[in-house]
Image 1: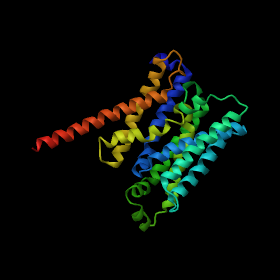
Image 2: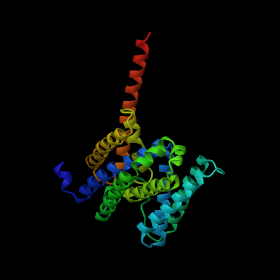
Image 3: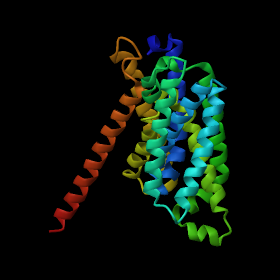
Image 4: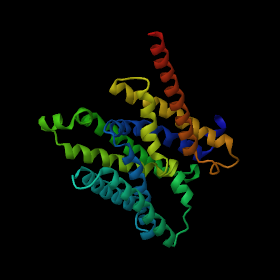
Length: 279
């Protein structure tokens, strides 16, 4: 472990994984409870298009990416809430078109960009500035969630009841999707656009197998996410001769998927045994 800490890029990766592991499950709980898990995938692809636009224009890439992602995510939410289009169709259109735009613009860009690093992340790609951005976003997410928790919780249970209680549903929906978009953008360097949504969803799905309490689900998901993220980053260092060979994001998602499978099987066996004991 001390050998890992002797490398600056590994220290940054470990810090970044902790920040992401704390914040992703917080927003992921409200995304999953609203049954819009696929929105995370679509937002990550929008981030890919935003990155491509920033690289192509070569004008404050991070600011360009965040601006594009926020505008596109708000448009996505608006179309999903409309009665004229099917939500799945809207997600499919944004999902595919954003990847197409990103691929074309990166190909036309004069800068040499490793698309694999954008798609899957890289330990060597993380900078001190990225950690600062992640820290700022993490503090913002925790602060906003503290003040918006009750509203988001009520929206997750019943939107109509929230409207009756004079809750500005559109505002809190927009707030959730904007924060999720920003989190995805600042986390791309470590986990990539293709796998970031897994950190929003999988820890929550695991936690839901262990508790029925809404608040406890978030804390358990954070614990699971921390365990898997740190294990994935550490394994990426020891299993490869060069950290960029095995992206930590892939290992993190594999570990999360394995835990989810084990917990799910264990719970199903309990149900089967309980059912058989009644006969």
